Length: 222
Length: 222
DNA sequence: TAGATTGTTAATCGATTAACAATC
DNA sequence: TAGATTGTTAATCGATTAACAATC
Image (cartoon, rainbow over all chains, first blue to last red; front, side, top):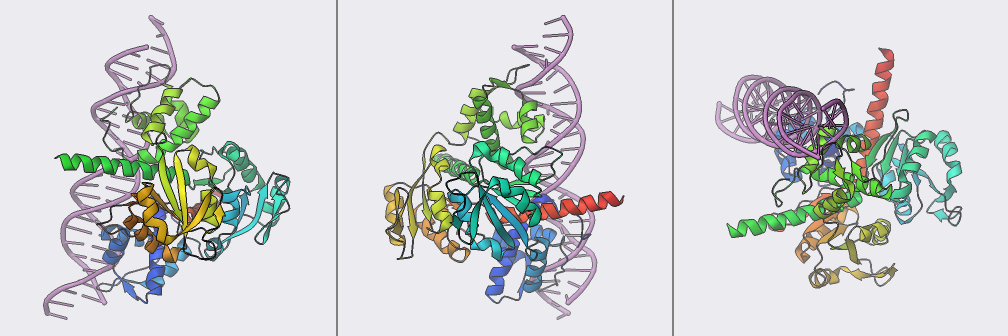
């Protein structure tokens, strides 16, 4: 392993969740040890990449056996912060915002949605699961008092930028953007933005399908 | 521009939706021409990257003026297939599946959700917006008759793999996976899988926040 | 022991950035 | 015209893959 505090390369971070879910599958299947090759095959990577990636973690494999699955799960979960609880708020109580508020997956992975906000007087005060929809005016107070780290943007694209600024000013440290628009974060508000890219993923998918079809046509001609 | 049929590098494809949303913002703001520098500033890229990326498209800029915004939007929308309609089905009529079925954004961007499926007899037959929840048994028939291209997996992680295979066997060409698990696609079923990574994005966000905080601590000590 | 598998170094590959002649 | 901006080539940077000595 490298120094504990050093940042992992970005592509590695993006693969860690894959390793984690795979390790959990293996635990469920009562597998004790796993080789880099077998992880690679399962996740569509090369064994080199797997070994390089895991060498960043506080973990060492054993010749001839590979990595201990339980330890692997433990170390990945810690690196990803799945052990500590991250408090979140959702802004936008539309279909998507409410669905995420009710998403049981989040809390089991350490993300605690502790409030949901909207600016529509019609819905303010109504309930979404265990939460009551609150007005935007309450945002800053809740973020401060509950020490909320993450804001989830689930509003229409046209107002996503405004909401992003409100969240960052209220004091959240990171934003998950579900809207199909790029968020510009002024340098004085140091919040990290990650895009959920649902629609962008669909476009990427449509593109891949089209190109694959074009490739198949070209291949059949040759 | 390069040959029309050639595949774009993957990082470029992932940036195209950013360019597209930006171009649309500019149209709304009545901006006619835009330089690579200004696009770069807005999206947090370098002007070199922007020019390289756009050079893949059927578009040429003009010295001293830049790119024509309307043409840019047009070309990007075409490349991303936002012009043609892509038929989708959703499997899983839980909170997330239903929210996506009701997502107005999809249809305005060319993705037509034409059916939603579930295997829970309790919900089969009930309505979600203009759709009626159908049993899994109807999947293959609907995919064939409606020529569905894309399957959206909105079921719990434990059954996502099974559903992925059912969708691919039914004949969809691509899968958007919303579950927090890696999907393995057998080589004989040539469906493309793209992960929506909602939970993985939250983990990535939590990681970035933590490392940024660690960096700030380290910097303040020096 | 023999052979499988790690950890790590070096080579390759690909993406981003810099630089600059062409040009409007 | 002068100067801003493109399109493209070359340089740099970083990530992936290959290779292999160490080792269990």
